[in-house]
Length: 270
Image 1: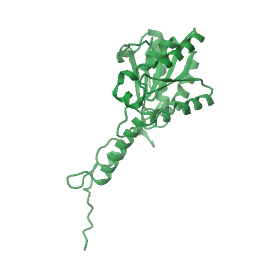
Image 2: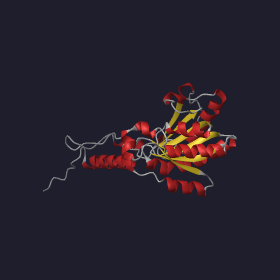
Image 3: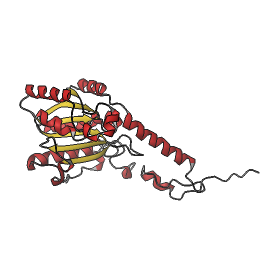
Image 4: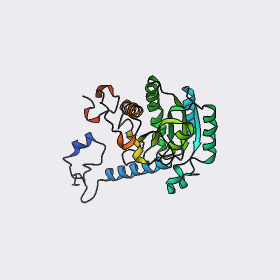
């Protein structure tokens, strides 16, 4: 009679996995991971690699913005291709000559400048930008206009890193800038969107002058909660004339029931 005992050892911590996407309580088969856990890990790793190399569809995003009544500018960093971008982070922090000139010409036609420059860059996950930038932007821009702020056209930067937003905003004569950028993919989050905000942006600033809001996605920080936190930072930056390490995020959190889907997975279904 064949032995019908399961090959994987029963896992008493299995219930914990319902509370988090983290790789805990995976179980074991002898001294190894069960095949299902190993295959899931390999699949997640492949998703992360694909997210890094996925091309940024700037034209498609620009068309969607135009359909919503928003102008956009197509720009490129000094990194000519994805290989250069990954090997030379410094090139992703600056615009190429053509993009810089395009912004100068735009600024000449709008000498009054802007209160807020809005930048979207592929970063290390174009997947995150394609999935989450427009839904977040819709919420953020509505509230920013309610504050009376003048917004720049949305600047779409291919092969861009965080610091490229400082050059964009400086050329547009913007008082502050926010960049929506794909974060480095994790093994459970290949589509995490990051927001970086800077007051008085200019070329040469380091990360100490920026505020970061990370993990914006349906399974992480909701669009509504991210907008709430970003608008708080903007208001305080205008009042105190600074950003970065000297500006702490002390926003009072809204009621979780009003924060939208994915606000807190521990309370899901309650």
